[in-house]
Length: 384
Image (tube, rainbow, N blue to C red):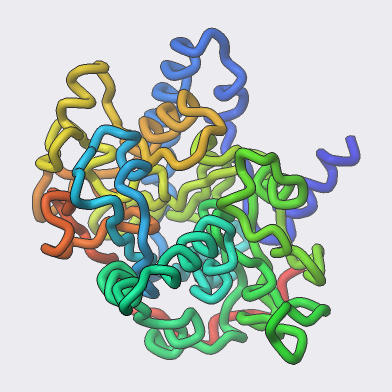
């Protein structure tokens, strides 16, 4: 009863509420019936979600491009002998909406700080390997796959906001994220001279409780992708946790999409052009719509195994759950207005459309999202 009361209090404090259509679907057994339950729940929820209204405004801005193994990007379906790495572009999305109490809110999705991501064991190891390449070739490789575009605080200035305008921030999952860089820390991070101040003022981080628990107690199979000391000195009251699917207000939901990680969740936004979905279950639309893909191996993967998706698969928590979650995302997303055969799914880190990585380039590229006008000064005091 204590956990239920705490969850209710958290959701009340952030003006959110749970989504009854998805209650219990992830417990359905056997697994084939679970997938069907997910489909039916998503169809039912989408009708209600769309009817509730749209967000005030949304805008995405690219932050950085980082290297990623081709082997992981398409679950082993793509094998290009000359190309072990591609680049994924991380983008920060700013959403303004009204919560269920009518308060205007500003949410920041995926405010990745590149310096924090570099501390994840996978990227730290890759950097050490690159540094060992002789004759300066390592730096040349790095220049091909790595590009810094904007820091999260620069993005705020670009869209006309200040840190004090932000109510909440969130990531679809905490792979290669360092919460200290976002929420601040009372302890000095190694290599720095003073404790980190919060990046977004009093903003709280929305996180699925399973994702936060994972970072608190890493399994060896998860360790390489998380910043192990990422909670050191962080005020845990700065987290607002939830344990299911929640809607933050009309036109904005965080749907629990487990599989890639146990606590993965997806951003779902209703706009004048229909519903958009964002997560890292895939790194391009080719992952969600492999039957349309021109990337060698992706369409064949789907046809050979009779699958509707081709997952981004660098982790092993539960591939069946990830499959179900990507179907959930496909049902929620509307067709693209400019080309209706493609869905409005915007990967939170998207395969770069750079010719240098041919033939591993996205078959279709959204490149970002923008609706309405982002406004400063909407925030009405601190969140609870």
